[in-house]
Image (cartoon, rainbow, N blue to C red):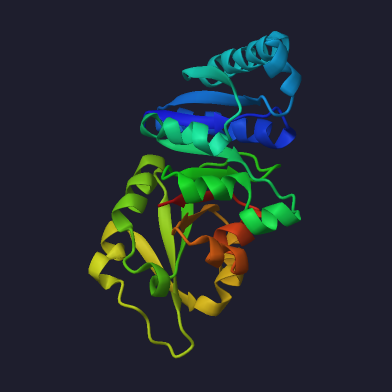
Length: 260
């Protein structure tokens, strides 16, 4: 992994995620980019007058933060501020080839628009195929010793073992796979991917209680991250059926690692 991208809006949530991203960059030997989108829609008068005062101030503030992180964590950390009328999803989509991982704060706020369209993180998951880590507001970085991976083979088919094992190797973590099964006890055959050959331990769990099963594993000692496999869904499906990602985003006590 070469480059980690961390959106910053200077809130407590994003500042905490920045500290987490710095540690991930350190253990992954990666470069960290702190990114701030200065939306023209938040202050349209700047678009009309061409004023750049506040933009320059934000850039200086972010550059100072990047310098402090570089010194404290002994990593390469840079600041990037863009003034744009485009949504953040569109901006990141244009940078797709240059980013290996996105790390951002977990937004627990709820409202009608978020219920319908999903949070910023959820929209990124839907439109951009870059792995993403969501960090709870007050979560302090801990060594990534154990990743719990929740997987529903009835919806997603084969277990993406190769992708997950590569990340686990990078962080020197073990993986506990929660495979959802139906009440009948008949399990979809995931053995063709042989997760156990990759050091992945399989647990059969009730797919109808998958959220509760994940939360139960979160309370176990040594578990430091929950991994989820993101599937694209049509808008109508998203409107009436909240995904596991959306439901955990507002309740998880651990970082969520989401990959496609």
